[in-house]
Length: 168
Image (cartoon, rainbow, N blue to C red; front, side):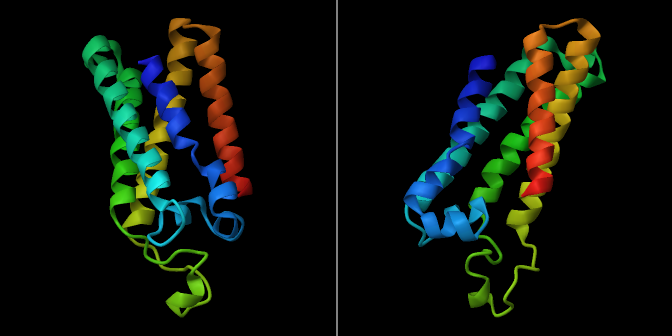
């Protein structure tokens, strides 16, 4: 399970390649704009998100099967379901075209991206799933005295993710 999550983390962090492969979009839009058809190497960023989703869905299934969250409390279930939501909706967000990318907002006729499409909705659901799984992993680590590595990693990731979300 840890290996699947680590692999998912590598795939999900394909966005720094955007600064090399599509510098204008990376500097002037959202990272999801890198997945827009017509962007250089857009297929690579889509592939990264799809592989992330597959790894995370597999990890959530393993957690559910091995730990039987129904028998071990709500926190295990929240962790597994959060991962499942993150994985499925990360894949789903790549399968629907963005309503209007930030870097191409002028082409939408508004000058700004105020419209929300299915891609945005799916991305929000995925983010909430990730938030639930990280918070649950932290609580599980504290409750069951799991390794300090799990506690520190989940808390650090949760704080870092929330801070970056607020900043950017």
